[in-house]
Structures are given as structure tokens and as C-alpha cells.
Image 1 (cartoon, helix red, strand yellow):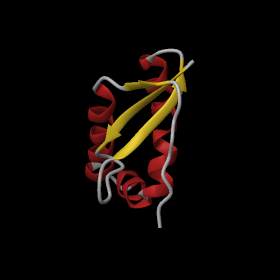
Image 2: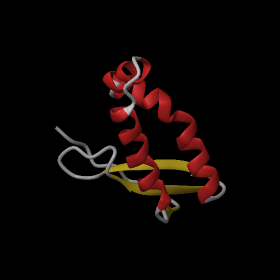
Image 3: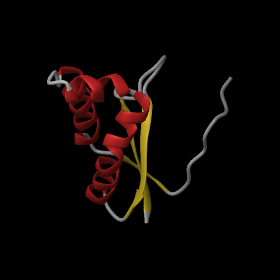
Image 4: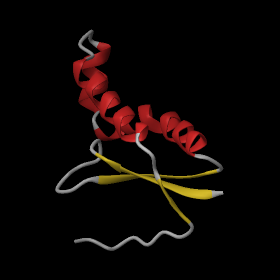
Length: 87
């Protein structure tokens, strides 16, 4: 298994975020990330779920579009992963 990493506009705050998955291939990594997208949106952007359920999917669709654009790129492949602390 390898560590696949994508720079992410979806997770951008002050700088790009990272989508990271441990998988056998980039496609398997994408599948793992897609399986958790709905949960991430519900926890991080509940407004998007609420408005979608009320018939206005614009914000939700935008988040899905950002996500799909992120993972459409080729990931970087890693054997190890180092994460800096932050304040």
C-alpha cells in the first residue's frame, strides 16, 4: 500500500489543504475519499446539506465539484508522511 496525496482547494483555508489516502492505487484512494465526502460535508459544511435537502443544491454541488477537481489530478506518492504542528 502507498500513501496518495492531493493538494486540495476544497480544504483550503490560508493555503491549500491535503487529501490523503492509504491505498493500493490512485483509483482505490479516490474511491476511499469519495466514500467519506458526504460525511465530511455534513460535519464541516452542514449548511450545504441543509440547503440541498431544501431544494437548493448550489453550495453542495460546488463542494463536490471542488473535490472532484482536486482528485482528478495525479496524486503524489509517498512512503512516509510528516505533518507539521500548527497553532
